Image 1 (cartoon, rainbow, N blue to C red):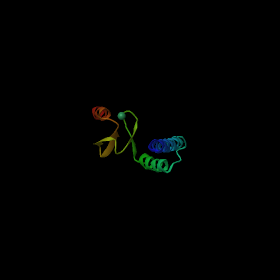
Image 2: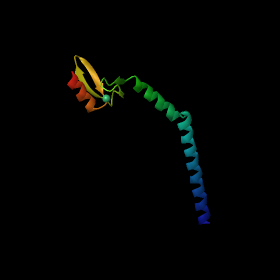
Image 3: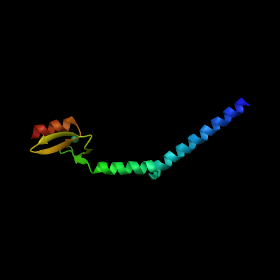
Image 4: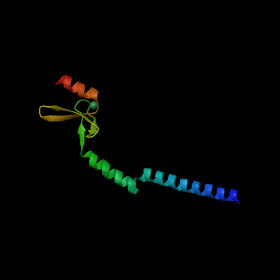
Length: 90
Ligand SMILES: [Zn+2]
C-alpha cells in the first residue's frame, strides 16, 4: 500500500517535472512565455541605456559600464583596460 502511494507520487512528480521541462523548452524556443515577454521588455529598456565603448566599440549597459569624465562628457567603457587605454590616448 505504502509503496504504491510512493510510486504514484514519484510518477506525479516526474510528470510535473516533464511538463515544466517542456514548458521551459517551449518558452526558450518561441520566447512566448509571459516571463520571456517581461524579460524582453526589460532588455528593451536596457537597450535605451546602452553606451558605446570608444576604445573597442562594444556596447555596454549603463549600469555595467565603467565611466570617466572628459571635456564635460561622460564616456562608458566595458573594462578598466579600455578606460586606461582611453585615458592614455587623451
Ligand atoms: Zn572595451
